Length: 192
Ligand code: AMP
Image 1 (tube, protein in one colour):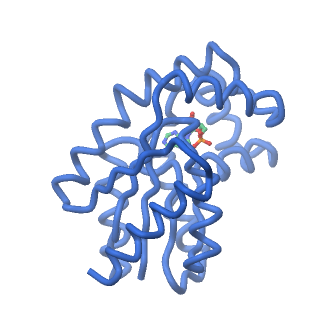
Image 2 (image 1 turned 180 degrees about the vertical axis):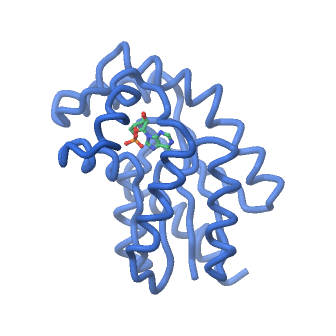
């Protein structure tokens, strides 16, 4: 199995690069943000609870997210592996992911950390906000999301460094060039 955690601040290009990785390596895609937005659209209980956090730019509580991820994972017939996009975002989520994958006889293969500077992130998210219709792509929520990223999510890099799975990639340039670097890293890890 090839299980990839795609990591980075909001606006770093996780979703865009995930699509290219999926095409190239035939992986399943789990984006917790997408799952939450689908729950919201379906007006489920989880969707309603999550919406309060999403519109404030805060993280949905770990236990809700971990439980949701386990259900999504069980509902998929994964063959080659999964790309985890927007999960984990906290240390408890990373520990839960490891446990879940270990129980299924697999593990995280590598973590790709996309680096993009703050000004570029804000510009990209504001630009996306014009098209996405997302309630959280506005300047106030973007600022909260970036703060939450720095305080709660960025420390996860250390966790994956300790696991020997962390790979930093410069996330600025053309989509194809960035993907080229990612592909190289994935192939280097596979062929280890
Ligand atoms: P995203 O589409 O990944 O930018 O996620 C949008 C919003 O969904 C985030 O700002 C959080 O409110 C929520 N969310 C998505 N994934 C997670 C997660 N792994 N843990 C907690 N909250 C999450």
